Structures are given as structure tokens and as C-alpha cells.
Amino acid sequence: MAERMLKFASVTPQTPPKRGADERRGDFHEIYADFIEAKAAEQASRCSQCGVPFCQTHCPLHNNIPDWLKMTAEGRLEEAYALSSATSTLPEVCGRICPQDRLCEGGCVTEQAGFGAITIGAVERFINDHAWERGWVQPIRPARERAQSVGVVGAGPAGLSAADALRSAGYQVSVYDRYDRPGGLLMYGIPSFKLEKQVVARRTERLAEGGVVFKQGFELGRDASLSDLRARHDAVLLATGVYKAREIACPGIGSPGVVKALDYLIASNRTGLGDRVPEFQSGALNAAGKDVVVIGGGDTAMDCVRTAVRQGARSVTCLYRRDRANMPGSMREVANAEEEGVRFEWLAAPRSILGDSAGVTGVRALRMRLGAPDSTGRQAPEEVEGADFDLPAGLVIKALGFDPEDVATLWGAPDLKVSRWGSLRVDLTTMMTSLPGVFAAGDIVRGASLVVWAIRDGLDAAAAIGRWLEGRAALSKMAAE
Ligand SMILES: Cc1cc2nc3c(=O)[nH]c(=O)nc-3n(C[C@H](O)[C@H](O)[C@H](O)COP(=O)(O)OP(=O)(O)OC[C@H]3O[C@@H](n4cnc5c(N)ncnc54)[C@H](O)[C@@H]3O)c2cc1C
Ligand code: SF4
Image (tube, protein in one colour):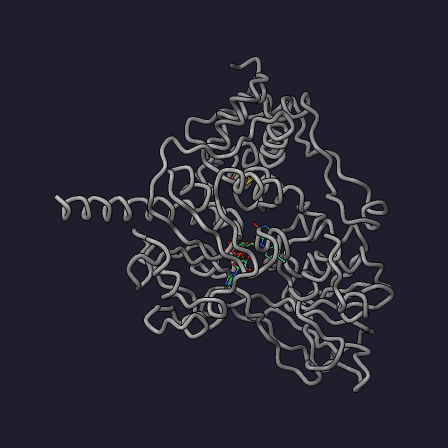
């Protein structure tokens, strides 16, 4: 093994080549090229094959990383693919958009030892893209069909993962979603320069070919109540994500030209998919030629600033009330945004939105400093008196995060228990909500999180649903005997 592996000291860590900022500012294509096979093998060979692999511990899916790295280094790509896809339903997606620096690569021993992490995400992406190119990713063919059916509400990563696992176990699976295409935030939230839409579409097409029935344009609460769905299926999984945008209170925040991040990103993604989007065409959700200010410091804010650059904004500024070190967004995305020409105003927050009834003209910002730690241990930002400054703006985008909607009311299900944050309460050992046979997974349970956690939850929920349905089937059989 030593010959092929353990090259962390002699081989420099590398990600696949990144396109230059000038080029990528002009389009919405992904910014990283693919590894060529030899480069993937070389980078995989840096793995130190730890006895206790911390990369695996830090991956929410506990992907068997050291083994598929070794197989890649040895050119055994079909086996590497089989192993990688055994624990993940969307490995090529995670390889692209997981914040690896905070997950697998952050736990990598070679990173801790100062040699730089193995570029795990890039190798995962390579293995699985290669598998798609070679035709190794096949539709699901369950070993046996089961009569019981499961209704999954929400075609985001949590719902898709659960659908994949349940259909593989032979259940009849229908996925309901209010949008016209499946994928949830993978399709309509995350911009295509991070995740091209064909990567998502080929996955959902594979699920449909394997017998998963997609019912798009169906909104729970509008087209059926939760009790209607419970009557239609033996079990129901709620995986509807979180969509209520957090608000900020300051004078002028309701002015024309102040928009919500997700409205802006959905309009951009739909336009990229070839849909007609009147708000984009009218300029209401289009940054072209404008000075743009994005308020917020998470990954959604980074997606907005980088989208605005690509739409041809005159200037793009990100206002964040804490400093760079305390930013919730991935440092990799901040660096990409800076390369693409985004200006960051750290320790700054909006005092008021400037403008008139015709629209926004600017943002008056106040300067902050970090004060004493609050109850969570995080330093609370506080205002610096007399240090206000103005930024020109023709478009202001609010990207302050998301909370759950009032789902129990929306779905006509007053007995559905929610937490004090509005997320669905589940028993964590059974993933079941307060309603028998109704399970939940993903952001609607955890609050706004990550794709990889939605996949984890979807798989856990599918396993729990399978156990519950088997129990029910056994009881019916006993009753019939
Ligand atoms: C802009 C943005 C960028 C992000 N970037 C990243 C990233 O780079 N990396 C990362 O790991 N995570 C990222 N995330 C987070 C990640 O996208 C989410 O954590 C993940 O998508 C949650 O998956 P989910 O399946 O729970 O919900 P979603 O992906 O939100 O899917 C929920 C689905 O349910 C549907 N739905 C909702 N209500 C109803 C209803 N009443 N009836 C029918 N259907 C309904 C919705 O239409 C949607 O399709 C990002 C999030 C945003 C907003
Ligand atoms: S799923 Fe995410 S955390 Fe796990 S190995 Fe892949 S990139 Fe790393």
C-alpha cells in the first residue's frame, strides 16, 4: 500500500483547475473543471489511510472515504463508485457543494499535520461524474415489489434521498412538490455556477425511471390537506424545507428595489433554465447595470453577490455585521466572491434604506464592533457611534436566513407538533412526528442546514418508515390469521 498511498508529504494538494475570475464573471457555468483520471489518482494517493479516519467521522453520511480514495489511486474506479454510492444518494452533488473545509477535509489528519487536506470533495465528484459518463449509474430495480405506498412531500435532497431508499426497498413512492421541477433548493436556490442543473436533473430522471412517481405543481395545504395524503398512503414523509425569509427592521426596508434573496435566486435560476420570468425581464429581480448591496453573511448572501456579478451589476457590496472570522458562510465561497470583484463591508449593518417611491437609491450603514460574548459565547456586534456611511444601491437583497412557515396551520393539521422555532418535532429514534405514520426530515426538522444533512435525514427517515411499515404489515398478517 505504501507505494501507492501515503504520499501526503511528497504530492502537493490540488483541487481541479478553477477558471479565471474574468472568464467566470461572464457566465453561470461551474467554476471548477473536472479532475482528469491521473490527477484524481494522484490526489487520492495522498491519503494516509488512518486507522481511525476522522474524515469519515466528520462526514454526516460517514462515507467510507479512505477506501474509495485507495481504490481511486489504484484505478479501481467502478469499485470506488460502488462504495461511494453505497452511503450517499447524491455523491456528485456533495462533492460539489459540501463545505468540505468544515466537514470531511476539516477532519483530515494530513490537514491537521500541516500538509494540507486530501481534496476529498473533488475526488468524490470525479468518481461519480465518471460513473455517470460510463453508464454505471442505473435506474433502481428493487429485488421485490411491496404493495405499501409512501407519499413524500418535498423533492429536495431530503425527500429525494428518502424516495431513493424506499423505492430501492420496493415500496411504491410518490413525491409531491409545489414547484414544476424536482430538486428543491438544488434546482431553484443554489446557483448553477456551484451546481449545474443537469447534474440534479439526471438524478431525478433516474429516480423516475426506477418507478418513483413525481407529482409536480402539487402544494400540500392548497391541493390536499395532510389528512387527505394520509388517507392516500400507508406512510407520509414531510420534507418541505424552510422558506420564510428572516426580516430586518429599518426605515425604508419596504421600498421598491429591496428584494428577498430567494426570490432573486429563483428568478435567476429559472431564467438560466429557459423559463420566462417577468420580474427578471422587468428588471425588478435583475442586477444588470445596478449598484447592488446584499445584506447578510451566509452562503445565501454569497450566492446572491456572485449572481449579481454575473448579471452585470455595476458594483456589488456585501454588508455583514460581524467580521470575516465570524462569518457563517464558507471561506471558500468568500474567497471566490472576492476574486470575482465583490466588495465586503465587514462590521456593518443597514441603518436605513435611502430612496423614494420610485425606488431605492442607497443604503445608510452603521459601523459595528464586536463586544462582549453573548449567552451563546459569540461576540455580540454593537454600534460605533457617529461612524455611519452611505453606499449607492439600485437593488438591495435581504439574505438573512430562513425559518419554517406555520406549517401546521397551512396544512390543516393542528395536531402536528412544532418546536418553538416552528420546525417539525420528531422522535429522533423513529423520525415520526406527533401524528402516527407521518415522518419528517431535512430542514423542516433541523432548520436551515446543509444538503449533506438533508440526505442523512432522508436516509434515516426511510429506514424508520421501512421498520414501521414492516411492523404494520406483520400486524395485519397476524390479524388475518
Ligand atoms: C441559496 C442557498 C444556497 C445554499 N447553498 C448550499 C451549499 O452550497 N451547500 C449546502 O450543503 N447547502 C446549501 N444550502 C442549504 C441546502 O440547500 C438545504 O439545507 C437543503 O436543500 C435542504 O433540503 P430539504 O430537502 O430539507 O429542503 P429543500 O431543498 O428546501 O426542498 C424542499 C422542497 O419542498 C417543497 N415544498 C415546500 N412546501 C411544500 C408544500 N406545501 N407542498 C409541496 N411541496 C412543498 C419545495 O418546493 C422544495 O422543492 C443552500 C441554501 C440556500 C437557500
Ligand atoms: S458527503 Fe460531503 S462531507 Fe461527506 S465526504 Fe462527501 S464532501 Fe465530504
